[in-house]
Image (cartoon, rainbow, N blue to C red; front, top):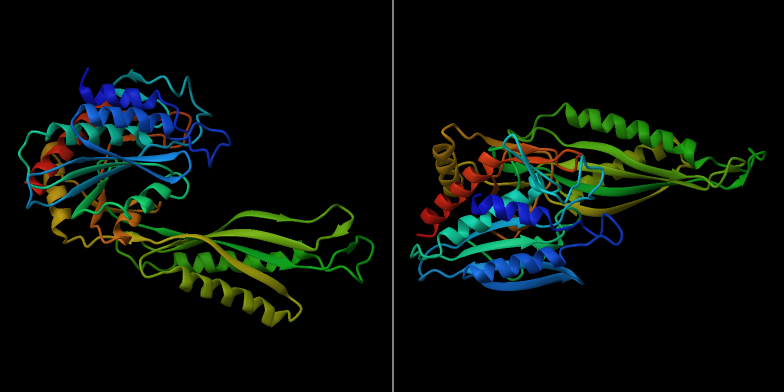
Length: 378
């Protein structure tokens, strides 16, 4: 068994479910301890960061001789819930060239590949430093990567998320917002006193749908296309025989480069003010919650070309430049001034009942990361 496959299996066998997703879940403490020991045994300088209590990030550094460029490889150690899963999610299984287990695809294979690739160059005489950052909490708020860039920087970075061998150079951001419509509580028989906040929310939902359609009609970004808007949750009412005093809908606005939390808030407020103009008695509150910026790197950036060259050569095929709709830690690194991109393994089943990664892809991605390190940090 190869070193990278053995390491990937060991990581999968460790429960590291994000406790902000599942109350009382294991978190990253045990997997961080395992990775720390592995890094120390391979000659890395090891630093533990803790952006929140009992939520460790492990950073390993291989020091170069000086005068070279620093490369960071970044991967997250937390996973989503163990269930539902076909079989034991913590028992890594290799079947027909696929490695199964929770986190195999998202993204313990990527973590294993970057660790082994970096360890292989420990005696290569590189001038630049190599940083491997095994971060916590990517599945919720990316506390790990946002904290990481307060302590470490680099001349370029690869986020080793699974990309099915595509080279991701752009991804969308998001804005979460709560809209609360205010009604008037009253007994269900007192239509003369009550004002139905749930029914009034109907105008908001219709306008949200129309704005989403308007956004979809615009193809503004060459890799990401358009933004989008949808309602995620809705809550309201006190009981069958009461006029609901309020109703709250949570909205998610997926954003493309050029769209900011400020522009989204203005867009939503204009939507709500349009409803109020038609109904002067309409009352609402708008509260913007968690936001994450979209990400892109110039396709002509030299690090994009370097990564594409080695990936294409070692895979024996053209590696396309792509954009993707989900958010990733590339944006956290980019916002700190680190040119970043995503490239990783082939597989399927992120957050699903059957999750797997190709063993051949795991081996190839390890080789690709190693080749990139050797040239970039030479």
